[in-house]
Every structure is written in structure tokens, then in C-alpha cells.
Length: 538
Image 1 (cartoon, helix red, strand yellow):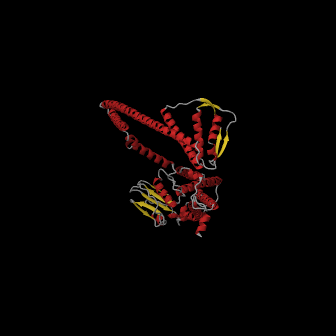
Image 2 (cartoon, one colour):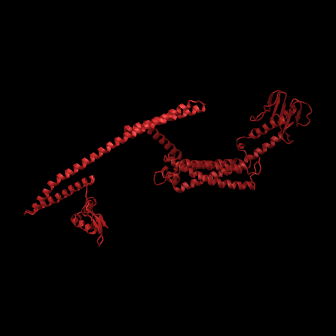
């Protein structure tokens, strides 16, 4: 069952459906969140039962407590503010309590609003039995000040009714959470099956996976930023802040919703493709190596490593005495010069005349460096000349050896060929004639090898004569093939010959060119595969 489920999940159609579901779920969640934002609804409604325990009421109470002490010169509190207030600043009283003629905090008023009031007197705060603990109390009141704020019951009841009415968004919030859950589930499924196919367990990469991983990551972050920024901007298109549930949208908000849905589909699709590409690269263990940053770091490390190795660990330089001296002289010159320059600059900044000494020292270092390199180069040139002379001497000895060996082989070989020729003219049994024929062939072949060896020695020494004459290349080729006819027939090769019918006159050494043609045919017969074709074209 598990194997069958895995096989189905790796189907291309399954992946496409999962991807589309993920995009649709993300888009639906974004649209619903944007709708809630357009309506000005607070998700806190789901978690808080009563309005007076909400952050909205805490903000309203904090605002009232900070506005009332400034009512005498900075604020005008509207009559329908929803609360009674009394404030005494040590000189004058301010309040909106009906029929309040006596100075001091009206005890009877806050006793009738004992569930939600805030009182400050003699530097001490007292609260009602059911006040919000998140209210931020003013801190700039002196001990002579008196402050009293009590929220009216009818106002709290009205706000509670609005709070209950706003709870109609709970199904919308649950739907948004469901969309998010579906999107996460599809994303996990696509992550598991990314790069896998039904037929095998090999990881299959696509063309987008060849893009550098850090480039893909930057594009992904950019797309996310664009999506979020666009939603924030479009959220500002809401015509008004709605404090209670109203399902209808204005025309501007509808247009904004259409744009948000379109952008969400586009960006979530692109983000999904990039995310899956990064997952495939991660599975292939190439997400780090397939990044520009990694390549730059590795190349930088390699460059620095090679640089420092070249300074201190250079086998090619250290193996030669003269180059080793030049190399370390260069290191000393660079290090010392850098030190002199830095010290001179510091002394110049400090306006100290001692920096002139380091200029003279630097001039001496330059002279020492140039003079030392000149001597080293002279030594290198001298040693190079000696080694060239030794090499030439060895070459001459080799040529002399080859020449002598060739000459020494030539005399007995000529005698052997002569005696074999005499034997071939005698009356001999058939089997003896075969032996004489083999001796004749092998001795002639050995003669050719000795001649080639002698010519090689002469060509190496530059003492070879070439007899240039006008000759017919076609006739020379035919003569060569006639001499090689028997070997060509017994080679098992198919010779495709195409030479001109008319004479082709050239200037060359006929004897040596004949040997070249003969060697080419001989090599073709020896080293070509049996049954193949050999083309002879002009």
C-alpha cells in the first residue's frame, strides 16, 4: 500500500494537481486575510470573550487617561466620549459629570461605575473591580493632582454588542487556517516528491536547477517582499475603518482584492517553482556548491593558498640554486621596501625629518636588489651555456655512435647478401630454395634498416645530401605499389586506389620519396585492422 501510494505521489499529474492546490490555498488565505483587514476586524475577537478585556478597550482607556489631564489647554473631549471624567491640577477642576458642584472626586459617580473606573488621588491609583490590566497609566501626574475616569455602562454594553457581532468572522478565520493547512500539506508533499519519478529512484534535475542557488534565493526573497508590500499598499485602499462586521466591500476595495489575488497567484507560483528547485538542489547535495558565493569563496581561498605557497613552497624554484637565490632576494626586497615605505609615511605624518633616512635606505635596497639579480643572471647564463655545450656534445657522441654502428653493420651485411645471391643461383632442393629466399628477404630488410639508421644519423648531424630532380609522381606511386603488390594482396585489406591518369611532375629526391611511400604502405599493412579499407588518393 505504501509503495503504491509513493508511486502515485510521484506521478507528474499528481505533482501538478498538488502544486495548483497549494497556489489556490495560498491565494485563498491571502484574499481572506486581506478581506479581514479591509473590514478593520481584529482577530483578537476569536480569543477574547468580553470587549472590556480586549486590547481595543485597553487602547481606548489609555487614550482617555492621557487626554483628560491635558483637557484644560490641549484637548477638547467630545460629549459622547463614553466615559465620565474629573481632573484637578491643584488649581482648577475640569469634569463632564452632571450636577457635580463639590470639589473632589465624585464618590457617588464612580460607585455607580465600580466595574470599570480609574482613580488617582494622593499619588495612589485605585481601580474598579473589573478593569483591563493592559492599560498604560500616565506617569506625569503630581501628588496634588486628582484624576477620575469611569466608563459609562451604556457605552460598554454598546461596545460589547459590536464585539459579539464581530465574532461572525470566526468562520472566515477558520477557513483561512484551513487554507494555510492545505498549503503546508501540499508543500510538504511536493518537497518529498521533488526530483523523483515513478519509474526509478534517481534524482532528476531540471533546467532551472542549473541556476545558481543564491540567485534563486535572492529572487525568492524579492518576490516575497513584492507580495507583502503590494498587500500593505492595497490595504491602504480601504475607504474607511469599519469597527463592526460588514460583508460588503466598496468598489475600490473590490478592485484592490482583484489585484491582490492576481499578484498572489503569480508570485506564489514563481516562489513555489524556485522553492522546489532549491529542494532538488539540496537533495542533490549541490545547493552550496551551486552558488556564486561558494565559488567566489573557494576561488578566493585557492588564490590565497596558491599565492602563499608560491611565496614559501615553490618546488620548481627551490630546486634550482640560482632561481632560489633570486626568489628569496625578491621576498626580502618586497618586505623590506614595504616596511620602509610604511615607516616613512608615519614619520612624514608626524612631521619628523627622520623619514629621509628611510629614503636613502630604500635607495640602497634598490641598488642591492638590481646588482644581486644582475650577478645571478650572469651565473644563470654561464650555467645555461655549459649545459647547452654538454647537450651538444652528447648529441654528437650519439650521432657518431649511430654512424659507426651503421658502418660496422654494412660490411658484413653486404657479404651476407652476396653469398645469399650466390646460393640462389645454385641447384638446390626445393626446401633449401625456400630457406634461401627467406634469407634474401630478411637480409634485404636488414639492409634497408641499416641504411635508414645511417640516414637518420646523417640527418641529425645535418650532413645529408638530397638529389633534387624532376620526376613523375604518378609513376613513382605506381612503382611503389608494384613493389608492394604481394604484401598488399596478402594483407587482408581493401585498397581503394585513385591516382591521376596523366603524369604529375614534381621536384624532389626520387630515392628518398620512394622510401617515404614505401614506409607509409608498410605501416598501413602492419597496423590497419583486417578487412578495412585503405584509400590511396591523389
